[in-house]
Length: 313
Figure 1 (tube, rainbow, N blue to C red):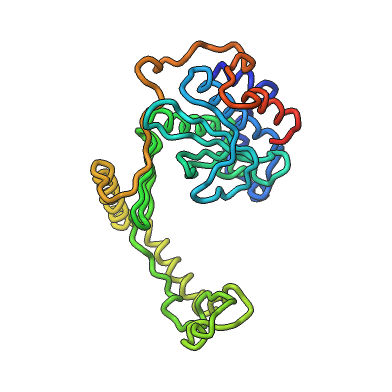
Figure 2 (tube, helix red, strand yellow):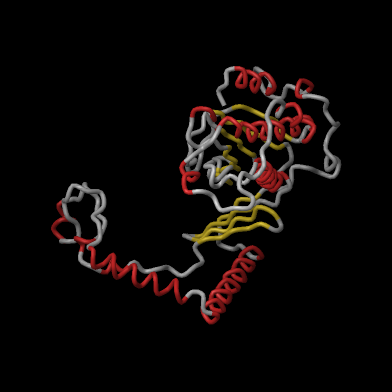
């Protein structure tokens, strides 16, 4: 991949953390300076696919994919690496016209239909920017997680566990549900749809006010704020911190138990792309032009060059 990145990243410069020793400024949160520079992520994705093709571990294709849930950013270039190893899951990389959008990013997905693994960067504003190397490292970690077979995603109801690598995992849905006080009040204080049916109106729980969400009354907002302030102020007490750590340990233990025995959990996982004969990769390539043509029609090199020439990414 490093050898391929020399070619795909030619002319693209990295940049350091713009605020290594200070907090971001307020105006940086709504600003994206030079979105074109994020093309370096698309170049990194190209390098990964070039390396996969050169090593003979996957076939690369430009194709429309079906997403289990559509990515939260628009994409108009989608490539898929279909591994040759038995039991391995495909890797999808998609990106948008980086010069023309508010949020330049690369989307990684796995499987068919594709499930979004991550979006890099998670936010492209100047405040969240920590430098190009952090973003490249993040992209590499997720790609390697899929290629090495470390990536796992488990679902059961509202609970979800995702393993990206040996030392990186996340989960959701294990925490206690928080009760929203205004949901205990009469229906006129509850967010309601504008298209309420006659049956809904008859129950008195919904109204026909021309608003997608009716705001809470001032006294309720003040009550919620007072309770929140109390919880925040008490949150720094040693006793409360001990309780939080204890809850985190209990949840982490449950996650470990599920990973060890995922019975009745829906699981997405693939085998490693590399076998014993391929673990060291293929020959080091001198440039992208030497890649084999593994897809019907134009080669990956030609497709990517055309995209680059038209300044479409």
